[in-house]
Picture (spheres, one colour):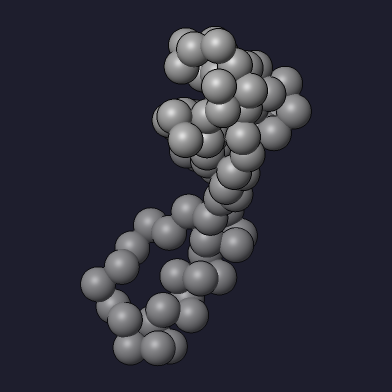
Length: 83
């Protein structure tokens, strides 16, 4: 069975996010003043072949923790659903 997985990776709180800061400054230049505390991140989408949702989630979590995110400075969220 195939599952769709999405992994979102972002810097942990307290770690400087220069990309987010640049975006926030640009918002002001565009006249958008209601948005604050912008944090940039990355998103990975892939398919997982597994026999159950639990197995697919475990595989995606393992991939996120070992390859896609740096556990020292980044947090990640994993979302898996049946195709």
